[in-house]
Length: 131
Image (cartoon, rainbow, N blue to C red):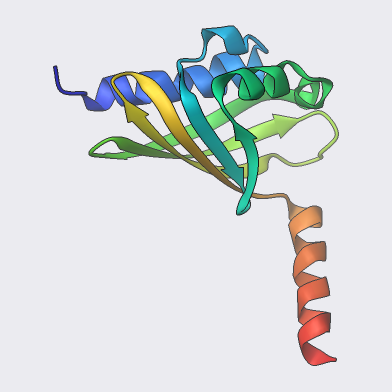
C-alpha cells in the first residue's frame, strides 16, 4: 500500500513528539539503518544509537514544540517549527527533513537557528573571511 501524506507526517511526528519532547524514543518508528545529520554533521547511525541519544540528558532541556508547518513530497517530509528549550530565552528555529519508507524513518536531516549561537558562528566566519 502506498504511503500517504498523513502516514509520512505521522511517523515524523513521533520523532518530534515522542522522541524529542516526551523522551520516549522507543515509540519512534526508526528503520534499523536510520541516519541523522545535524548542521551537516552525522549525529546518529542506526535505530539503537538514536534511541540511546534521545534518552540522554541533553534532551531534558526540550520543553515542547510549536507552530509546525509541513511540506510533503513523495517519501519525504519537511517540517519547520519552533522548539522550546529550557536555557534559551527564545525558541530554537528548526527545519527537519525526514525520509520515510513503509512507515519507518530512514533519514533525518536537521537545520536549526538559535539567535545568539548562530549569530556568533556567523560573526566568526565573517571575521575569518576579512582577515
